[in-house]
Length: 173
View 1 (cartoon, rainbow, N blue to C red):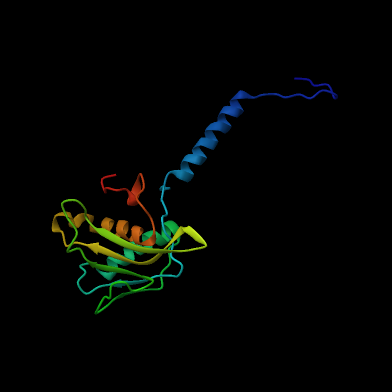
View 2: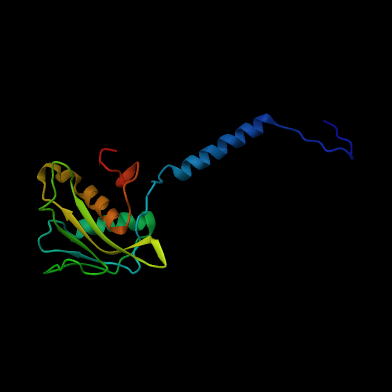
């Protein structure tokens, strides 16, 4: 196509436009393929300590595996991780793993109680005071234990349920 110097020429090359569109779609798909739609409900103001209570059937290695998952996903950091001789309920800035004695295993595989607070100058922003993760000793679902620990730790970190992935309401997603 010849253009006169004083005229503006716009040449639409439909093949290049279509190729560009598909390249953009592939790029977007690759960026979101591993993304989960995490729903953050609460935040920690300080790095939490993590305690494994004496009555818990969860090992330090299992907790470390779940912590690594969250470190890789969201760069989660914590102050310390230790198995303790005694757990005191309500210990500020602490995530505690305890037994799941009061978890109804017919309904749920684990349970996390998250205790929160807010400041009067921002009443809609919630912070975690402490969290208690309850993992029952359920041999019927022992093959899911690591996933349950990771899911429940996600609640303690401050996430609600999502539509897919580790924070989905049920583990079959």
